[in-house]
Image 1 (cartoon, one colour):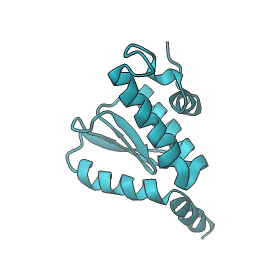
Image 2: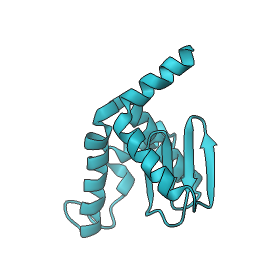
Image 3: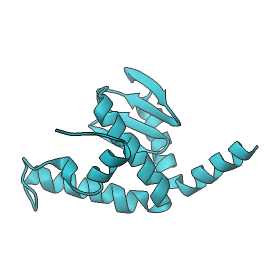
Length: 131
């Protein structure tokens, strides 16, 4: 019973990303090459997915890459910390950085994507060691 209450609190605390993750799961899981559980996270690997994203309790990746999976699991820890603010704070910051980097605004296209927050924190939380 205690576990059920704790899970319910996690769902309420992370409701926006849980709803978005469930919607993407319904869309991408049926055509996925593989769906696997990693702790409390369900990882969906689908080549049709554009890159990687963490929407608790789901992680979506375009390919099975242990380092990228660990990185996205680091984002699930951020989701637990930020709750309802995860998408506007972490999500928008990540998307803004990605788009600016791709267009060469503020960051060079060749800069290290994982060197700025929240990506470097997700690496640290997921215990990812890069180059």
